[in-house]
Length: 97
Image 1 (cartoon, rainbow, N blue to C red):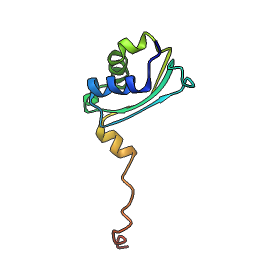
Image 2 (cartoon, rainbow, N blue to C red; image 1 turned 180 degrees about the horizontal axis):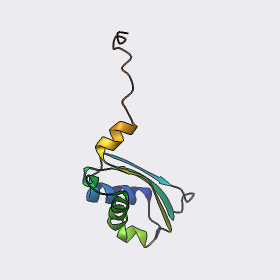
Image 3 (tube, rainbow, N blue to C red; image 1 turned 90 degrees about the horizontal axis):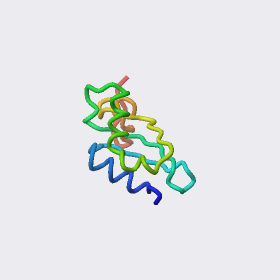
Image 4 (tube, one colour; image 1 turned 30 degrees about the vertical axis):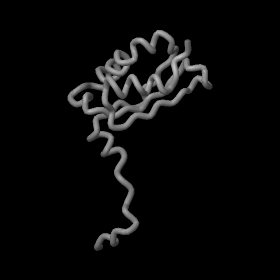
C-alpha cells in the first residue's frame, strides 16, 4: 500500500512536533518519493546529520514503502526565522532615514 502525503505529515507532526512542515509528493502521486522541509525545536543542539536521522527514524514505518526521501531543510525555529524574516507591515510608517 502506498504512503500518502497525509501519513508522512501526520507521523512527523506527532513525533517531531514541527512549527513548520512542508511535505511534497515528488513521485507523481504514487507515494514513492517525498520532499520534506521541517522546523522543530527538537533539532536544537543537533548537527544536520543528526536531524536527518531523526526524520528518517520518525518515518521508519513509512520508509518501508518510500523509495526516496529528500530532506531539503531541517532547521531550528531560530534558523528558520533568520532565513524567513516576516514581510514588512504595509500599515507601519516608513523607517526614519
